[in-house]
Image 1 (cartoon, rainbow, N blue to C red):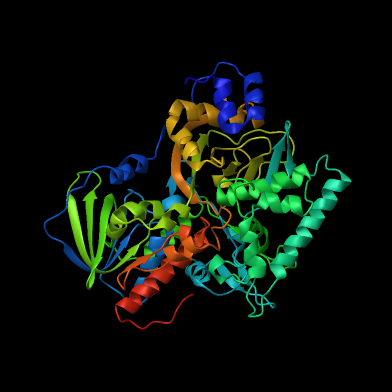
Image 2 (image 1 turned 135 degrees about the vertical axis):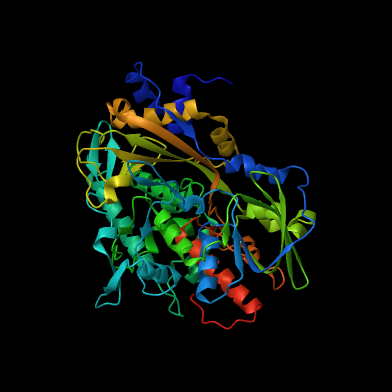
Length: 544
């Protein structure tokens, strides 16, 4: 069904943006650009008929399938242990998954994850990676790690756009009543208490990564209901606070508080602090976002070990290893590997089509994994966008839009001039509870639709931005983020999915942690690599 322009904007971004877009409507030239994703088309080949199998299989000690953060973390761990015969194969032409990045003549920019919260604890594989990056400057008197000043987000960090003006921070204090502010203070006190909570074994109730959290029923029972229901039960009804919590859930989980378990919703606010408020030093970022972390992981893998544009379509575990069948994405040429150990670093919805035993008898728990779609767009401008109110920040959020707004790629450059060209990275989680319907909506829109949507969203806050726009590129992520729906974080499905098949096939991905975060992907990648080391008979101290 054909939608009018206003109906299209309302369907994707909400009625407030649609009304604003129509008020500002005037003829303009479309911004040149393109849809730049292709995994949608290539990856869907797994759903078709049988793909060709090679006559001969290449022997290899370890095959890592997938060069996202989890797969690269596995290869990183294996390289550190001295395992030489490792091959990493990746469907895309660029590794990194949703942490990948791009670059043009103006700046590097992210295509997904754009920051890493500074860790609180000087331990674990993420801290090891940050030390390799020379991002860690030391440890303070209380034992907290400290980080290079140039990598911490520069001021101003955040601002929010509401009814024609920009305001500092994410919580909309302008016009807030005394009751609103009292409720915010009470909410923050509750989150601080959750951040301080420990069980009898000394484990944090809510920890990073989630695998280190307490499994005591006192806390895990929160997983049964939604965050929205928890807020209501606790008497948190301020629309401004509810917006803030919804924003947090959309930002990290791709859906609203109505679709996120209360455990996961509280984790967002409690896990990265020690109970005394926000103890974390802040956020670490680069112009390319977490693409910088991907580059560091890649640098640890010996040259020639990573093969791109390879679609793995079958992994069959057997005695002494796995047979892995693939085709080259460009030519269709069949490939095969005989691997002693395999790390399958892809999401469960892909694994369901790839793991041979699961094609014959699909485990029931696969149905518990839900994934939300996202759209990320990079808009190159000839000059910094003009706006009214609080000045341009790193993170610029639209209060009345379903998008998350945008980050400024050049904000973390050594010198960010107040004028001059820049790249704005715009984020839209399709947050409706019916993820399949949201995915169909994302894929049904073409470049012209997305150009109109991005510019409608941007023009509401920056009326002159159309004249500054030079190019727009749009990436559609059909299954961008696993959703921690009620009952999932501490239910049986997620734990069943973490189990290896025999001693030869091991799994790694952020979805095993229930949250699409760098720390989860890194942790499960390292864990899979350590299972590989055991399978190879290699003794090595754990990094976990």
